[in-house]
Image (cartoon, rainbow, N blue to C red; front, side, top):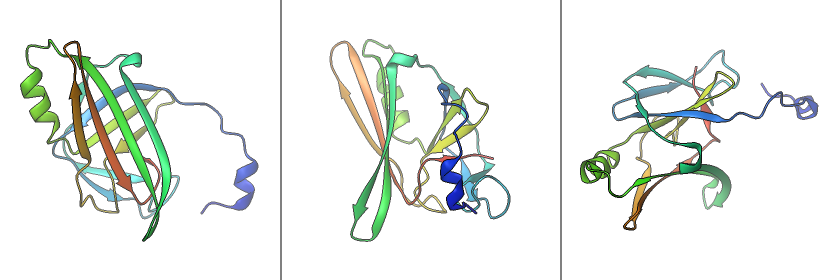
Length: 152
């Protein structure tokens, strides 16, 4: 349980995303005991991840809290870009429309999972693509009841 005195503790490091992994078939469950934040942290049950190529300059991640009629939620957005002249661009775009989870691997040894909207995944992330002759940009937006979840 998070205690008010925890606000005075220094965060030890500022994580950097080292790699991205994609899952089209994963299953998750909330951690009911253990972890850093029971019921907020996530236990990976089944599924596979595939590494995604990216460079630090080709992606952005952001999260903001928004107030809805039902209460507060977090809007998480991940954008990444790749060259539009990719020979497999059409199939890559079609495949990404089926994406279920994105795992962010951090330099501090932890990882976070984008794509969780509730204790069970019951809505897909919003997918958008936009292209110019040079660059295709993919945006995934997720509305979640809690901030970005870490995986155990």
